Length: 265
Ligand SMILES: Nc1ncnc2c1ncn2[C@@H]1O[C@H](COP(=O)(O)OS(=O)(=O)O)[C@@H](OP(=O)(O)O)[C@H]1O
Image 1 (cartoon, rainbow, N blue to C red):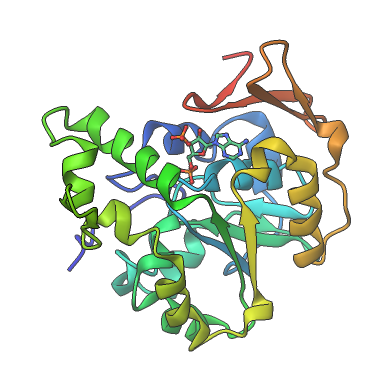
Image 2 (spheres, rainbow, N blue to C red):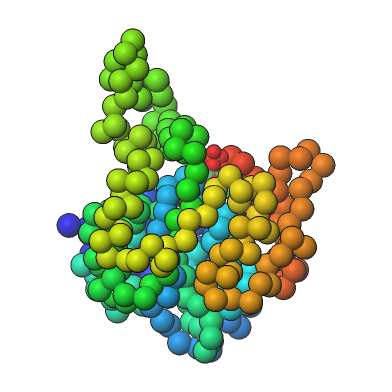
């Protein structure tokens, strides 16, 4: 059972990355106290449920620019690790919203958690679900690279991937491979949600055509298309995607492997 330690609202869980912690609500800043002082904490109406290393952080941070979206920055891990804490605990993590605003969170491990679909459905059958999918091979490499950075002594990617290098037999029980068998996990979700309630976002297009993907996401969420191509530009090196939050005049930089950082920080 998960440890029942009292987490503060928005506090990242013990396994959250630095990237997540940087994106956690900046309690105490003048801007956040202004937004946090009014409205009501509501359970999320939309959740980014996966996939790990698909580009979920980028998507959530892009969406947070929308004035009708409020999201918890850190991953709550409610429907996998913290379910015993109860819905009141979960709601407490959420930012306050005004009428018409959507509450969101992202926890990519939900997609591969057997219990998550039934649990989310029992919270609200109408919850909108978003899955950022990415080529399973590059996803697995990204996953492996993250683990390697924490545990440099793990075996090579190749030796973990193949049961038998000569026959090419793949070890589908290795989590980096297992997570990428999207169809298998999806079956579990379709037992509880109609396909129309699940939006698949391309992790690749989130980099090559972010405005296009964000258009689809805003439509799916029933939001006015406010995030457009005006919010994105590539810098001169071509591989850094810069994202401008014009509402707060706060430029963020999203880049492959570099995560999210303020250009001012
Ligand atoms: N703008 C944009 N669009 C799409 N994807 C982007 C973007 N920016 C970063 N990235 C890449 O997303 C990878 C991290 O995915 P996640 O945020 O889902 O990771 S996590 O599961 O929350 O740890 C991670 O992939 P790798 O660099 O291959 O590890 C990020 O580089």
